[in-house]
Image (tube, rainbow, N blue to C red; front, side, top):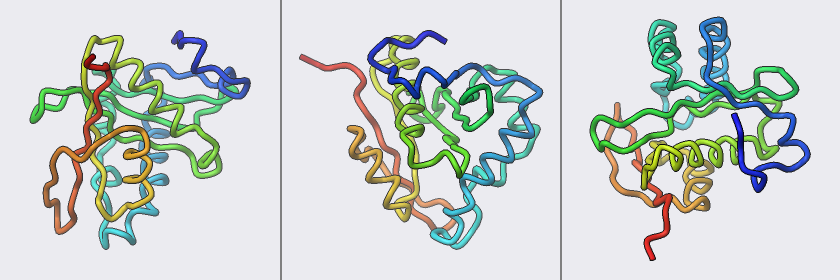
Length: 170
């Protein structure tokens, strides 16, 4: 995938982001469970992403909505971009980065890339859901320009639906 030069620092040149393939399904599932497990104590239950079946991951891979993130050819992350049936907006979901690669800017790079891809689709807005209890992630999205659009209760936890305008409206 070609990214604009403004997204490329030296370490970023070692990253490849591409559509996931069938051979990566078990890695994707394992990584999502690993990345989402720290959220479990905050919620008092397993987050929805940890409960997703391999069949569901396979369906997303076949629909070309799942992306793999590789660093020096090694699988380190994943994310999904799909249209939200409820909002009819593009949504970034299931963002996961391997534990030993977290806090190195890769999550930011993933979100920059996802937003860039959505702009290429000529979409004006993007949404993402996160749990209100996950303060660090809420702050991350607020810092990126997302605003809380709505909220809902899911199995006793408040889920924030956050939205970002991708185009300036001058």
